Figure 1 (spheres, rainbow, N blue to C red):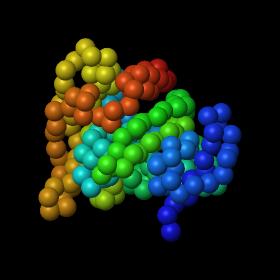
Figure 2 (cartoon, rainbow, N blue to C red; figure 1 turned 60 degrees about the horizontal axis):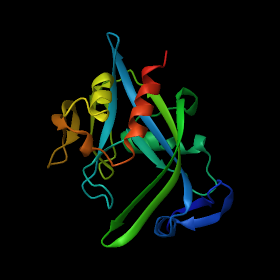
Figure 3 (cartoon, one colour; figure 1 turned 30 degrees about the vertical axis):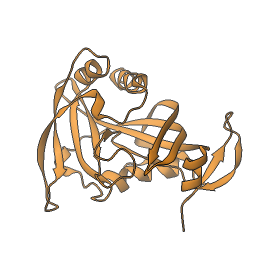
Length: 209
């Protein structure tokens, strides 16, 4: 059966439940979790971001949040932290996550000519991870690869001060093997959210002790 979401009005008052497809067809407000993973090396912070699987209905092959997902009907944000392990293979207890914001966003697109309206209240977290990217075990049907870039340079990218940078990471090859990879990264390669979202979250992570 299709997954059900709790749906809300503009004031985020619960209105009932709806299927995933109806939620996005009619633009019902719903809740999601975003988690940005990062590591630190010699005082420099490196942000991890995923490359979406090429089979995704929406924004295939775009770069995106390290791990993210919807809250199913009846779930709490704590429950939804399971998305981190499901997407990239890292078990992260909820109490290790650091909340860095709440984001209301509305993305309007289309899939095969059918309107897709994504109105979500996103609970945004960060997680400092001591593991190397090579230790990740992404879900091969969800995530094509995971890359990293220095936080300062990513900020410059989203603020329009830098045209591109090189992201280093790991991705699945054509034979399904996980291997090291590098890519030229531009701001336009990321899922087209309001750029202020990326800047605000990166600055919040920058300020963490």
